Image 1 (cartoon, rainbow, N blue to C red):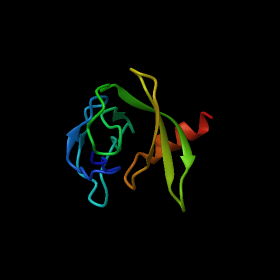
Image 2: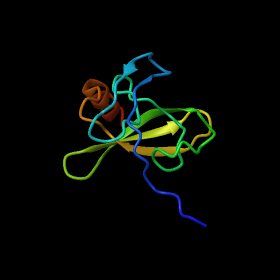
Image 3: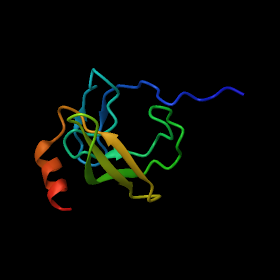
Length: 104
């Protein structure tokens, strides 16, 4: 039995189902959320595998410090309640990140 890879690189454009933003590929890693509203879609078990059948909206609920000078966006799925964390991208909406951080 083969072991599934933990990360599958999928960096493709998409239309955000929450705000309608046309999101372009990130270019330096796989984009997993909308840079405008920071929402994501619950489609992966491991990054890029598209193996999760939930398909709920992952909404940002908190921001945590990451490694070095990065930030992690903490999500809660509005369908199944699962919590996930994803690294913030360089072009993410900084005003929204600050707003989420100030609500803690």
